[in-house]
Length: 98
Image (cartoon, rainbow, N blue to C red; front, side, top):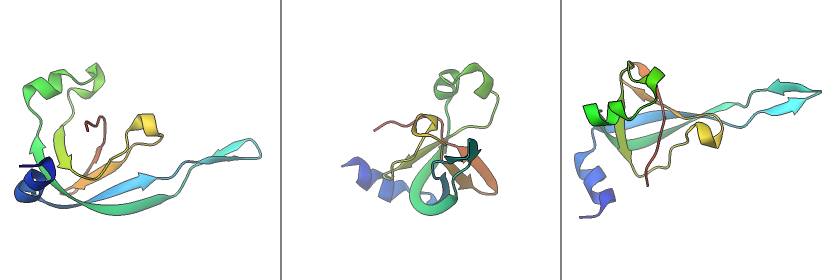
């Protein structure tokens, strides 16, 4: 079974992703980009101890989730990271695997 089929079969819902566009400099001052929203279908699971121990030191104490989706999410390396709304909490995308 392909990963896309597994995600479709085990999805836990549809979630809202907030994505910031790249900012610009105007007269030497940085102006942040605007926010856009998109929806994704995903399977969201709690992170295991192994996943949490692989996080950078300052992020290990925060609540962490694993998001399985076929949509490419952006991390800090792409500019501003995406945030995923899970319940009433926004989670910042830290890392992705393809």
